[in-house]
Length: 282
Image (cartoon, rainbow, N blue to C red; front, side):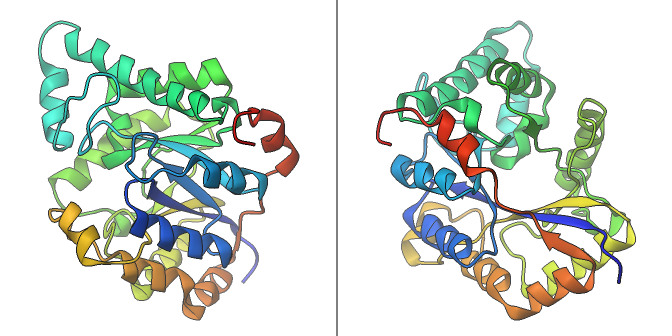
């Protein structure tokens, strides 16, 4: 098969839990993950490790967390995207302003911990809430401020890859609206079975991506090491982090990437990342 394009495997949720971090780092070390999205407010976020990954040429992005974890700005906790959406629909600008402050605060945490936001490769969010209009606009403002080039548009390149429920269909509608603002965005794989993908499901999605003739794509992955502690922290997720880790590390996955005409993204320019690393901790 002739070359179709490039595949960027991005691991979400770095910094939320040490067992997630362990799985992500193993996939990075073995070349199966080229991009990492980290939670600046996460309980296990390792800023030294993030600086090291930048120096290695790993694409690093901010995973804006507005649900499921306490906010850094005022400590509030919203349990999920539905709670956040209801708050944003209330009249007035109280919640919109609060969201903007929290997004700004999470970028500030990067600066305070030795990572200039200007060196970030992308922005995305927990449960893809950045597709909500007010959050999207807040993220875009920060991106323009720091010169960040890419924001995730969680749009699937084939109807076969869409999660067939209300949340999945709503996400695709929102993503399609946001796509109009972002020329050349990367369509996404891995969304329909997020946190529960297997080798077979990853390989199957690559087949549909190739059929859609998408030149470059992003595979959104959630590798980790499934442990009782991790499961107890996020019992409502019903994730199988080890399954996704094993799938990414499998020989079958690499074979499917090649067979469908994709090549993994090359490492980011290490010199560019190094220029933007602040003196603190480097």
